[in-house]
Image 1 (tube, rainbow, N blue to C red):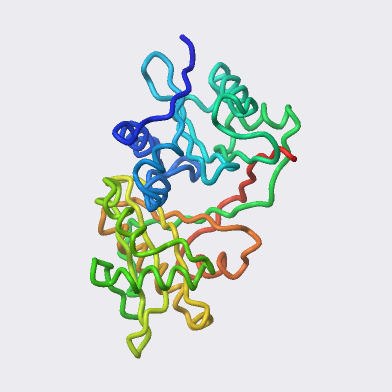
Image 2 (image 1 turned 180 degrees about the vertical axis):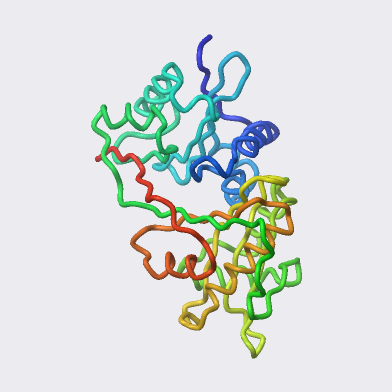
Length: 288
């Protein structure tokens, strides 16, 4: 049967995110998570749907991708399709042909699971390796320690504090109150929590959003940030620990997070919060 590329409409994204849930497994490398799609829904349901790509054969989903911007495709495959040659060759054809509506001409990148045949084939096509990312994971079989600071779950009354901390932490204006409400209105947010950490004076200093993939599956921390005026005081570790505790309450088997390897302070923060550093990952990049 032929492998078919599709872009789901807003009402059809659930099939893709259901597949992503089912594919999460502590025994597999950290990969595209339904929470990644949930976080992208801050741009609205239509925009999020337009960023999703699926590949199926005989009615079965084999691969799901998310365009994180126009030049980065983050993707994963069904567990038994990592080395599926027909799928991998169709993926490469779609990724390298702009007319197929996945990636444009010029410099682009693809995130694929380690060991996936599509990554090998892209390398054969001359795609190089980008700067590394570091995945980290914390097992949640045992109770999580107290974070040591006040942490609150964000509801409508704390949205402005949540978005303010994010904008300050990441130095960008895009996460507005309106976008938080768009994210929270998405179906994936039913399995998510936004958290705020406060200092002793009641000032919000750190924030994160965590996403469950369902009981017994890895949960995702995305994003996490500390206000620049309050860094160096342990708040990053505290909000990370609180995020892990929230995921455990949601039934997650582990908590995972990914950061640029060059961000040594971020990696150290996650390690201090009980996360184990996993082997670095490299996206495939086609030069301009």
